[in-house]
Length: 110
Image (cartoon, rainbow, N blue to C red; front, side, top):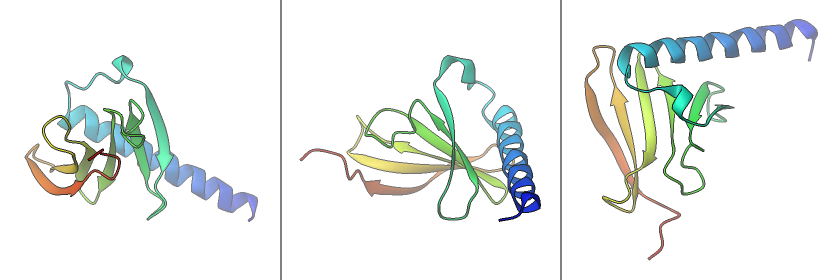
């Protein structure tokens, strides 16, 4: 990979992250990132950036992750203690929210 390719990747990654942060400030203004452990991850499916909050819930914890999906934000995390499931909430550009999908939590005991 050439140096210019790395620069292009870095610029795209930075642009994805800034867009996600702008959308968070607009659509989830009560989310105070200073009160949480955060980490950036590149999604393997399309190379876009996701923000993991409190571990992202990937390890079965109470965290969740947020990613851009077209004009929407997708917030994905555990629905425990309500249900042993993982859900995706879509936040549209107007701030509307809907539960888009619920799947069994693969880490739930039972």
